[in-house]
Image 1 (cartoon, one colour):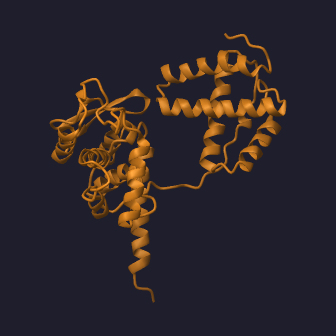
Image 2 (cartoon, rainbow, N blue to C red):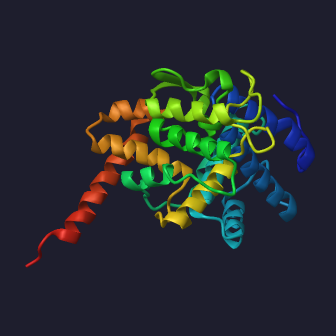
Image 3 (cartoon, helix red, strand yellow):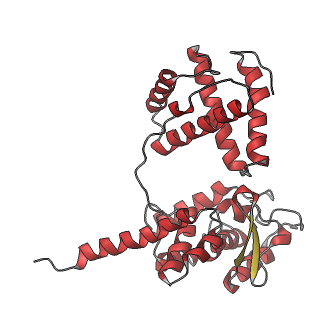
Length: 305
């Protein structure tokens, strides 16, 4: 049990938040991006309480309502607000369980209702068009091949961009399978298409840097680890150049991987394993995408009396 001084923001941050984050990492198996988001969420609420002179050890529904108004004034999206409230609920449950606070009604942390959204996919022909259009005269040839190799992993193997960019040289795609470290520090094996292995090899053959076995597989222009933002920006440029849908992003390539497998008759459980979803309900959303597309097609072409 941690002892802290009430209304001391710095003491609270050091003595409470870090053990909570460690708990989420060790017990819940959360990844670094999720942990960073949770930490930011709670720090934001603590800063709010500090500024408004609220007792952050004992928030009530009026404080939460005021905080929600504060978030609305900052024009944060509903999903972001929902995540912040979820983070706070998790955080205060930890305080209760660890007996840092004696009582609190966690039901005050009510997230706003979210409109159900479907994963947005991209037509397979458009994906192929994008992959074979990665020629930019402003870039060196190895950079074009690097970006293409990353996108092949997203669309051809269903990797998250964070998973692709966390690969080391010694883990470079070879053979028929690739072991991936995904969310929650869980490993999964994904099958590889020859075009993926060839794409990565083409990039490595032209890469001007001596990529060591323990080094990141994908390097930036100066030889450091490649930033996700570089790939995001590259996809944005392709979107404008080729007239791709507005939702075309690196993550949409992963969605396309799943929806195209499903359309081809793949089993939902198999897709769940390939994507690394812990819950089948998450993968189930891709069946909703197909149903939504069928409904849209029906409305567009069915003759009406």
